[in-house]
Length: 220
Length: 337
Picture 1 (cartoon, rainbow over the protein chains, first blue to last red):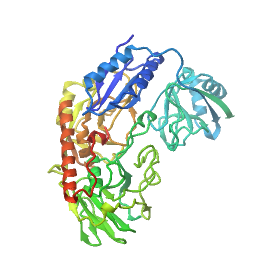
Picture 2 (cartoon, rainbow over the protein chains, first blue to last red):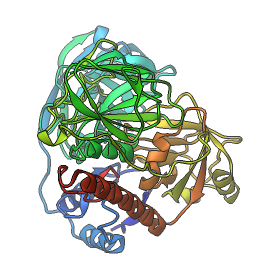
Picture 3 (cartoon, chains in turn orange, yellow):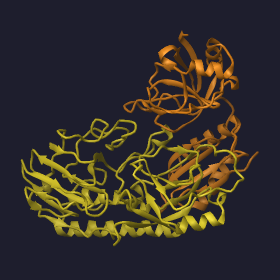
């Protein structure tokens, strides 16, 4: 088991790195990160928890917190393995692939040397895991993309990508929750609302959720 | 209501921002000079968390459709009310139909206008702050336009018959074009060479025009290079306002209140919480210098800021003989970490 590396981020946050490597992530480590986040969220001096990729950032009141004791508590909690059993929910997200909703599907197919239909089948086949939310409100970092359809980001990012766009960027896939600029290869569009500031919680997806994309339509 | 006759460069509704929303990818947001925002609120008898207008670089004309009590703090825009000068870091009554004119800011970048009862927009995710990037909160999730009519709360009875009054502003730097901010070395500090460290602490860093409420992009004499031992970007980490990232260009980016919640660039340092307001008042084109400090010094700086706010509270309470509610300052660290 790896030890927890704890580093200060300013005077009011700590970054805890759980993985053996700073550049590659594992699901086993991420499960421990979720577990640590769930424990630390309830500690009275912890103001916020922010899971990252194989790491966890904690925000606290620097005038009311003994940082050494907090670090000690984190190390202890890291030794406690998460209880058996899955966390998270199963969530299906119907996607309209190709056509005007997926302007880069042909490019992904060309890069992968596959038929567009095969790209879509391989994108909709796996069970993806939500590692954490970041980058923009409700944006989920998903693990589980079939590496055969990994495609580099576009050379020229688009100035406006509509909310709901489903894209591939390198070895990652994800859904843009909001209209925003973006450099990912857009292969489809999800009708689900990924982020609603009036909802509680505001994000559709949460760390630990299992996501399946279903083919709502395919326009080649 | 406030009729926005001229909205200026960038005027938004801001309070002290959002907490416990980062794990959903939602930025903290809130006033870039939380100290000025708090004092503006306390001057008119509001809670710390009431919403204010954050006015960037002045040049703003506002008309009040009802009588209220108003305060201006932060950057001084030599404002006048129907032609009669009003001061910064002061409160003053406004009669129905009066017009407040703010000219271009002389020093600093952001002015806070508080009204008794607060700017009355609905709360979104626990705050009235405008998230410009995501387009929610504040007034219709956007910056104010000419012609907008902004609802304001009712001034409490305590706000009536209150005399104009000013408070001592926090210490402003004498040179408005150069700011020194204190920095704690970041988690990836040791990824940089000793020569790079020296340049980071000694070089002048200019705030480029390509800066906004998400972050300041800086430009320095020479880019900051990393040691060659890291070939890939880091895995994404949580980030907080004040974090100084070094992207591949080698030119630092300081994250501010509207920054995204996670990032993968190496973090060479973090501006201490007590100096975030100085960043918020640093103009585009001005120069930043970084001073290394310790966590103990950062906490002491925060305590010093709290003492300043307590002095303000005491002065107001004494002046109003209990008309304003007793101070309820928790910690200024509540002003966003």
